[in-house]
Image (cartoon, rainbow, N blue to C red; front, top):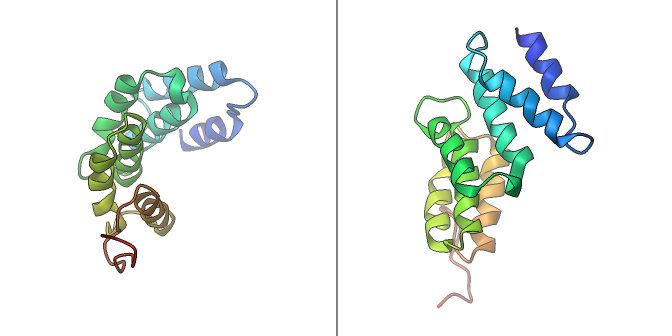
Length: 136
């Protein structure tokens, strides 16, 4: 099963055929024979590929189950959910959602770096960073 899933992920090129990519991901997400990790990865990829073509509430609903403790892609799901808050114009809530991810041991270093940058861009101060001199 893992090889098939890997092939599916590599073969799907959203730039070439977004509808086919989303259909393939939906098929994988709905397949109970696949491990939860691969189905979670497919869900995450679906949200990213669909982008604004998928209603914000639907993207959030798809990500929420992935964001619970113990799920393999929890940090990525939390990051994407914070970006939905930004899309909604809820900057303070987005900063609050992103802040714990900076120090999340489960989060890959690249994600922690991205999240720190996002917090700074939004006007916040990431944990562990010196407050900016021009603040206040």
